[in-house]
Length: 286
Length: 286
Ligand SMILES: Nc1ncnc2c1ncn2[C@@H]1O[C@H](COP(=O)(O)OP(=O)(O)O)[C@@H](O)[C@H]1O
Ligand SMILES: Nc1ncnc2c1ncn2[C@@H]1O[C@H](COP(=O)(O)OP(=O)(O)O)[C@@H](O)[C@H]1O
Ligand SMILES: [Zn+2]
Ligand SMILES: [Zn+2]
Image (spheres, chains in turn blue, cyan):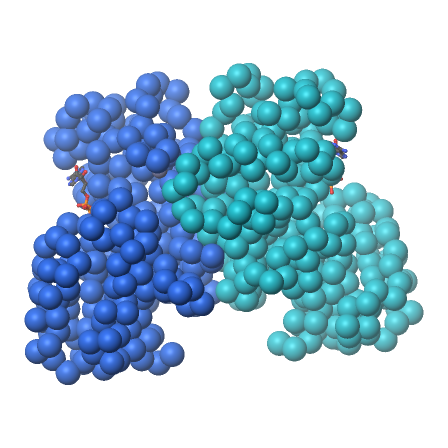
């Protein structure tokens, strides 16, 4: 049996599956503080005979195998989770291989293996929710360099009519500061889910997400860009992003048709947990 | 013996080396049109008994081994070079393995193997010259996804006092359009090499290059970012870029000290040709 944790800032989704990744049991545990949350995860996993575990975690996390804090959540704004040895706690308890990466790299792995990018050899997965995070799967590996990407924190050009100063605690007007769910709400004083399809908000949002797609395209050259997360529940938004992107790119590069290039997740909200199961499988075979 | 070509828009540098990459002979040939330029390259290489050849080329080029136009220069603005089967011409003539990648991926390979990033496992190499191009070396491989990166063509936020509209034929105000050598000259009407160290130009230039470093850092997470190309001959510029970057990052990520992270090439202007020799060596061992 394989175990997996999709560790998010509000909840931990835990699952066990057979070797073919068929999920056998799944639970959701609120994210409180490490000791308490881990205890509940242990209670769940203790019931099963696990061969390997995969963890896709919120961050920033340390993914550098040569670092003394490999497997830790590091400088997260969630204070109780700072400097938490997450992966190590599961290695010690279960004595099995424990795969470790970011939630979004796990989702990218899920999508490239089983989802919308399954016939491609690379993808970027970006979640537009409470925050904006991105992961990528390139050349058969999740993208990690000196650390892991933090794709929501570069600075896109402001929309000409946008006077909102941005809400990122670190950067103000980085992508997350301008285009996350809370940014949409901060700009208009109305929750993103309550804004109608014709609201000006979506033209502005599409501007920022198109610039994100432009940056990921020119810097990473993935086979496709998958937009997930709560804000993408606005189903009209993806097509608006494609149209803005088309203008920004201006035929500079040969890309697939944009409705195969800028896409929604094929695994829906299971990309993260399926990807984490795949991390378990990779850890087992490593 | 190994052969290498660093194929640029104005000149082709060709070299032969021993297995330890000691360069034995090197020439420079003007870039005119494919038939003429290749004939001169053939004349040079015909003198030697080559085991493999490496080509680092200007682009856009096709680096997808499964494509029918693998090895071609594709949609370049240099019309005579559009749809040129570059790598294939050398495979046919010399019947040896021919490594093929972009000039900047070759330079990144040179730097990560023998240059400023030789004790690191990834780097981004960016050239700021007539154009702006970037390559990267990550997880032991040059970065190529569906195509190769075109890191000079994302859109950074405009500097608050900059009214220049940008000079990229495709995008106007992309990074290349705002921060290449011709952009500096277009903004002030004075060649970049003639602007004094205290000219306002360098504060603006540092703004754009710092945003570039911010985008590469958040999207790729490399171990270091190497700035090369003619404009970087302004030796004061790199420190200005570090200072602007430090403000933009605002301690969000743990990075090495910035004078080890944002750096000049260790191989100087030999990064491209040494990297191309390494492409030959990799082709031989593939
Ligand atoms: N239907 C919707 N339309 C627009 N925004 C939505 C919708 N549903 C949720 N959101 C926004 O998405 C954000 C939550 O993102 P989500 O991906 O669900 O969770 P999290 O990022 O916390 O994991 C909130 O800011 C919320 O306003
Ligand atoms: N010392 C210098 N200071 C500033 N800019 C320079 C300097 N030397 C060259 N440049 C600029 O660099 C550009 C040429 O870049 P270079 O990297 O030498 O060639 P290319 O990009 O054609 O391969 C020109 O726009 C030129 O103005
Ligand atoms: Zn930010
Ligand atoms: Zn451009």
